[in-house]
Length: 82
Length: 419
Image (cartoon, rainbow over all chains, first blue to last red; front, top):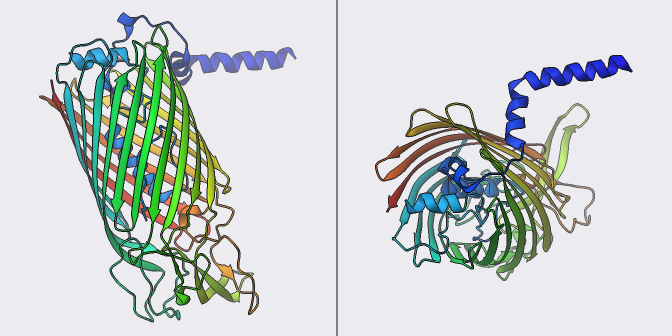
């Protein structure tokens, strides 16, 4: 039992030391963000859809070649693509 | 300056149908318009489909509480597309009306598992965004898409509301679409009828209804995330009027796989008259590192009552090259299961065998995977934003007659800001 706990503790320690874990931890940690702290969030490249035109084109391409579509929003026209 | 203020106020408000940033209430109109334009070339290997797509998206404020989006799209398509028939060079079918806008009949004795086509599509979409109050926005949308053998008319309404601290946005949207489907020669073929009988029905009609519920949340100074659920129901004509399926007899030894398909007859495909879809979509944008790298991750789970389930994972990773330019690799992986009624072909059993009610050999309804690798370069220029990207896409299918599609995408875009 103690050996298993030691093993789990060792793995956790190793993971906490790796950059992936740190990056994930940084990304998903909830913090309050005051209005004056939103400079990064306001950047073009931090929008959830940073290039609407590229997304629109991609959705048309994949809609034409795959059986599933949608998810980002509703509205817009269909097509009889081959 | 206006753009920066807008983005600060809507950092979490990006759900509305991919519409570009909308003006928020309480600000003076200063004619902040921008025009994004793009030219895209899509080409499939082996002389399959090629498409040239020209796009122009205009966004601007028309009052302190209202903004509009005008999207124009012109597609020019040509090439050859699989019909669903098995590869046969000596079938008894002497001619075949081709896919979307086909201009050629294929002479007897020629291969008819692919047909040439050409078509042009014009799409127009308008969206009016109105500041409902200090925290809420409502958007009304309308769209028209017309090509030689397909018309689509859509309307939508989306509502979003921020929490007081503007760290969370709730979104709800409804949309309806009316599609008219027909062959270039008018009408639609009788489903599961013999191609040689040429039984033509009237144009196909389809009504679609979509509802979306979403939430986006600022997690911290460098991360924003989103979760959407979409339910869609469509009723009417879902069959592809150009696709066919072969009745075949196996010739050879099926045990060691050394068999071929001998096509006896050919039928127009048939799909169910309704479809219910569910989609769960998650998205995240995160910045990290000393040089301000950003990563965009999305995952989508899709399921419908045709038996199709799919998983889509997409990643863009942007690395600044300088203060005004960047490079952005793109990776996408897609996997889908087959529709219940997908089959490579119908196997011959007896002279008067009963045909299935629904059957399609369309490779897009088969088990399959798709892999995309891409690279984009972008640069901020004086008064505008330039981007160029190249994507390579490879789709692999399990049973379809054409079990692989390889394509590339080249897109050049320029966004002009009018402050």
